Length: 381
Image (cartoon, rainbow, N blue to C red; front, side, top):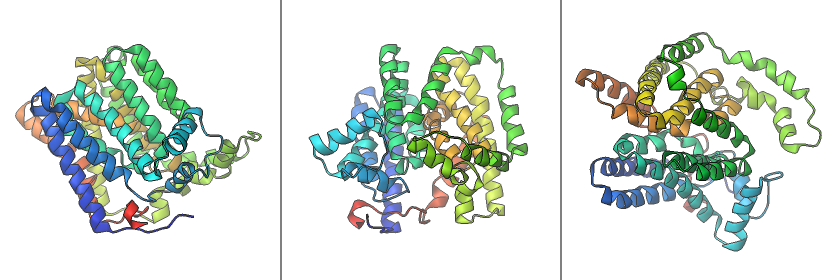
């Protein structure tokens, strides 16, 4: 049993603000300074992210699970081969403390993204801090985001046209987290199918988003719970645990707003409106950016699916987990949009809406709040 300290929210937020500022400064340096300084900015950004994110303690319901794995008290049933190997290598061969392993997990994630930014440095001033803001679930979904690192490494190899390395990285993903096949499938699909040439304009994509936004209801998924609980997967422990708890995983009972009792307010209506407008911009401008540079096709495809997944699943846990298989490439798309030449007034409108949505509502407005999973670091044990 691990301790349940909630930590000091002042320290938590000071470190998060420090990290965001560091990533902003380093992103600016990567975008606007000479290429020879990339390693310096990448090293500072990577070290800050790895330490501040990796030294967290007991945040999220998955943390105790993966802490136990690292301590040799396995809680992951039938662990995937590569995940088993990584844990055993860190714990039994290198014999590093558990917190070093979490720092390494965070380092793998940020280093993968920094390698991508090395290929497209001009967008780093936007993409690097947004990566931190938009992947907050990495604190909780530890094994999933360990696998996500390899998807991003695959994307970096894709940008280098090194397709053998792409395959190697993608093969690693489901051997860390089996559900990673979801991301691997769409990665390969978007790598092969040039949808930006098949679809002439973004209006059909916008139409699907708008229709779902206004007419979809999460309660439509309620029929799944009875259906899933009647399925028989024999002795498959993982599937059995998901199906037995399908109300939490697949229905509104698994919604974070349901658990916390969050209610709609005028403020949430405004934030929802800003979010709606920002994703309209991302879908619209991202599509044309994809037409100009086909190398962001995978990032745009992931981003669009993440937006749709967010609409149809909300914060219901299972859908949120699949959403997190897609969202981490969105900063690439947003950064590309923000650095695309536009008329001055158009640019300021786009920037303003995106900044309000992702920076103000995604970070600044949260400052001072105590996360539901606490805000502890390893020194709070």
